[in-house]
Image (cartoon, rainbow, N blue to C red):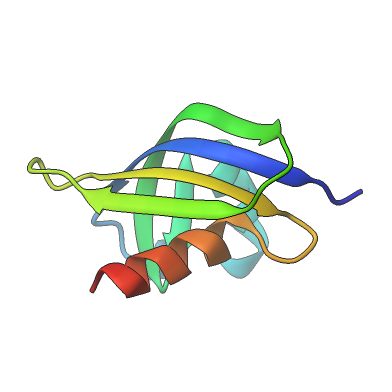
Length: 93
C-alpha cells in the first residue's frame, strides 16, 4: 500500500561501477544501504527512514566533505525515494 513517507540522511558517492549493480538486485542493494541515482551509486545513511507523515517536500545540500544531506517527505505511490532525490540533485546542478 502506498503512503506518504519522510526520509532524512546523507548520501556519499560510492564510486562503484554501475555494471556491478544488476537490475534484479537493486532492492537488495537498497537494503544494504546503496541507492542508484541517475546512473550513479551512492551510500545512504538514514537519520529517518520511511517514516509516515502528511506533507510533501525535498531538501538536499552538498556538504564540504563531498556528501549530500537530504530530507524528503513524499507520497510513495507517486514516486520512490530515488526519483525524489534525483529531481532534487538535478535542481542543485
